[in-house]
Amino acid sequence: MVKEYQSAFNAFVDYRKRRGGSQRREEGIQLKIDKLATSPTATKKEVPPPDPFLDAARQLAREYKHISTSFLQRRLRIGYPKAARIMEQLEEQSAKEGGA
Image 1 (cartoon, rainbow, N blue to C red):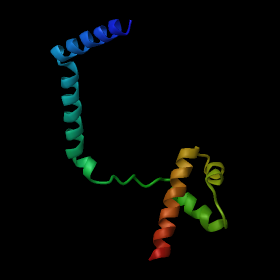
Image 2 (image 1 turned 60 degrees about the vertical axis):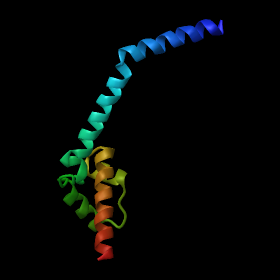
Image 3 (image 1 turned 45 degrees about the vertical axis):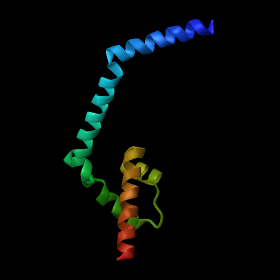
Image 4 (image 1 turned 90 degrees about the vertical axis):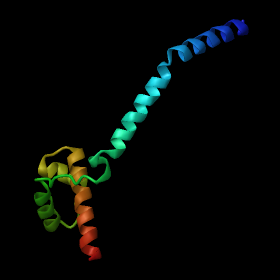
């Protein structure tokens, strides 16, 4: 029974070799990778646009001793992903100001 599977497998491999499908697909993938690697956006780090809620979050940070992502969600009435991004921006800015 193993020989039947092996011969079927070998027949399939021979068919794919004759057809050359996997080689063309691999070449296509390589072309896409090369294109992405040389694109101008792949080489420079994209800076996200300033968030309009960032100023409001800064004001809250000044008013309250401790703020959190969920605190920003409640106060600014925004979702968790946006609040988390704002918290990261605030933390980066405070690290830059503290290191300067």
